[in-house]
Length: 105
Image 1 (cartoon, rainbow, N blue to C red):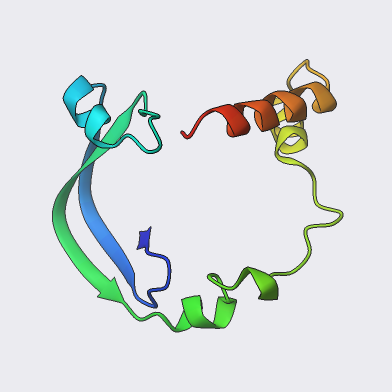
Image 2 (image 1 turned 45 degrees about the horizontal axis):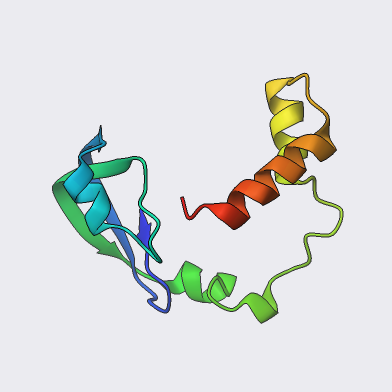
């Protein structure tokens, strides 16, 4: 499923995918001087549009209308709990925040 900001319709694609580290392709995807380390190539066999009513009703593209996330676990807490990781949640949250701020992908 592909969602495009400010578009109501959703594009559903059937097919396969492969991963690549092809330098020229990755360089063509650079944003603000940051190049991804991996890309997904989607091999489309069939593509179709889906009605966007659910997207409209969800207010997906309207952050001012989003519900509060207060009380929900952090991404780090979810990873620690689900993966039964032996790391402190605060340490993982800090690492994730630092990674998000220094890399694009």
